[in-house]
Length: 194
Image (cartoon, rainbow, N blue to C red; front, side, top):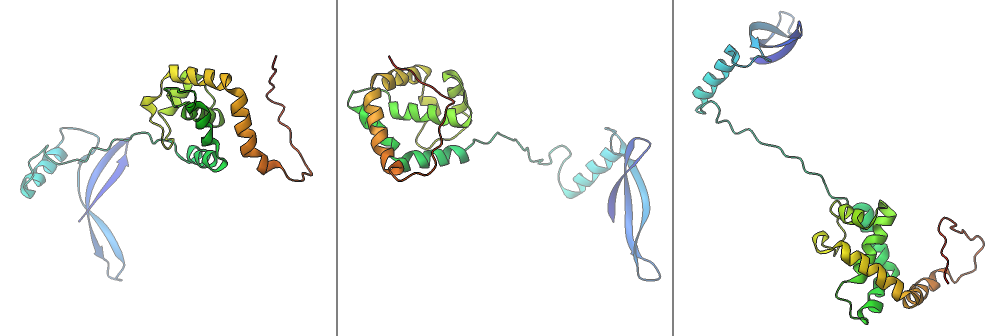
């Protein structure tokens, strides 16, 4: 026996059919009964299903219907690649410049989060915190970072700019101290110092 669902006149019907082979041995189906409309609650079809459940030993309404919940997934790919590149280039050593100043905030971590946000989905400092709840950055707890810490980290970056520039130059110089035939300039950002 087979249950089929068919549509007719804008309604859906459940029909009971049986499979058989005709005289030439070809498989066929024949309609045994139209049970009822599928889109109508409280119909004889519901009574039939409840009766079948009782025969099976499951009372009506107690069938364990798995509840499926969908949650959004956290982004990992681009942030993971940036984190690997950050450590590969040695930029995590920037933390040494700030540790000597005895900051209570992990300034390197806050700067890393802001740099990754700027590369992935540029936002304001408050936007960085919202963005952080949708991604996973290795070693960063989203609920441990505050807006105030981001602002203080930017202050620390400006205050120790010379030390940071020296550290970044030492890290990147071996990568660019080669004979170059083509040089690309990024003119989208300009900085003026007094």
